[in-house]
Image (cartoon, rainbow, N blue to C red; front, side, top):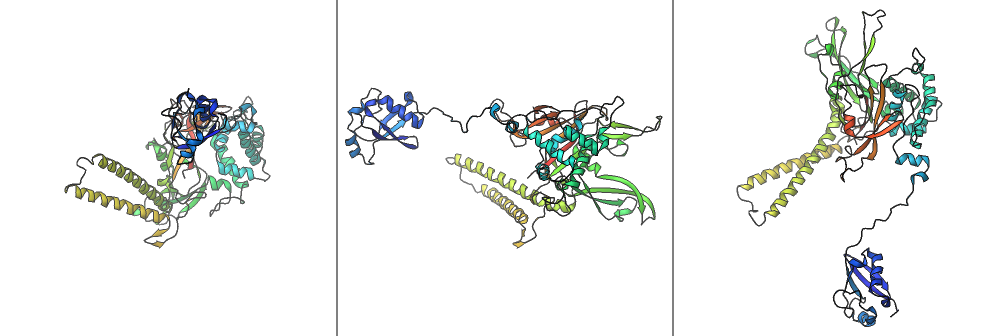
Length: 546
């Protein structure tokens, strides 16, 4: 029989239509079905659902031409010839995209899929290279530089250098940027006795570049926020409010009028207080210490000079927070011949984590806004935990349905208590959500104000680490700078398991040693706390968690 026959084939939950010629045999039919379902012929078992075909499982030597298909079709209630296919399909993974070889890609596309490119050291320029690599993943800065059409050569070459790093997989030479830097800031062109370029301070370079960009990248697309008129201060700017209280007037009766100042970094004081009586072991302790200090000034109440305590607090938060570890300081040398002093480095270890909570360093007004979002997040987390516990309890009750699943009289009070606790949690969650939406007791209130440009109203004051500049060596005027930068790519799987269990844990980091780039892990970065001759953190860059 050479007339084509159409079958309705049921396999798992799917139904396929297969057309075959009976005279070609059973094997040909199975090959046709393999093309539809992926079930290989040796595993395919066919059973007839329509009467008049064959009995049981179709054998490979059965003559399909012996079947009266017209009679079978007329006798079918579904008006189709139906069969059932049993068997497991081979796992066929078809390519989602066309395969493209790396060597066929243009340079800018290659740069996106290989390790990021490094910067060539042009003579003790590791201070510059390390900071540039940390500025590279700041989208607000990159967008501002791409839109910049002013005449400042340093700002232009900064944008060109960062863009060039994205377009090539090879190491890039920032010679034009360096030449312009030395022309506009001659201190970066200083040389030693033998004419070799001198090592410079990475923080000084960062501050000068930020100041230059702030003067140039103004207006236009700047984030709309009171007191912000440039991209740099909209991205890095920290408004500090300082109050002073006279220590010699009882009960803090004399307090100066608060003053505000703008900074683009906060300092972590790692030397301790006066006489080093205060021990600093953690970044939070160092920041708190740096925000306080003692000064001597005139007291109107006492009519003479007195000791005052100044306390700084953050009144405006940035999208990107920079923390400088006070590793270097100037030590006086009165016994030396020239009395010029000497620059020293603090080697002591100061730990830091991948997340920095800035809440305790903020003004009361900022805290009040952050607290609403933090309370809301905590209430939602408690609600999730409560639901999870309830689902576990329900599962246990179902498992004990055949036993003592019924509640006894002694169990009733505890169950009522659980219901009351759950009700309180729901009310707290509803209150937090209502407050965040600007509603209280059913009456609309003013919505939460953002605590900084580009920050959402629900920001909780948490920042995640994304880049670190480190310094190695005991000589403050020498040594070597490197940068450690977090990538958007995830770590490769090891032994079939994903590295880490969260977005922060499984992110890949890269260490930039000028033109040498190599992957590393978050644990390697968190070891950069100092305390030895290895690299230690000097500048930490954090971005707001959203």
